[in-house]
Image (cartoon, rainbow, N blue to C red):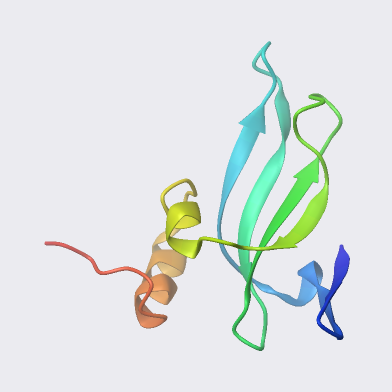
Length: 94
């Protein structure tokens, strides 16, 4: 998905995926995925890819307004978690 912000064109396929969370309909059917993405210029984006199973989940690519809040909702692989620490978005508490 592509979006334009302040004269710059962004493509979700070329962004780094920080983590993601799945959505389910009221009848517990998979309805889509929302990803936290990072563009090459350092901006963070929220990308949602729906499959039409729920009218509450719609496709879109938007600038992420609160990265820390989004981090609380997503699932990350160990590699993605390491990257988030490198980006100084999270600190790992032993």
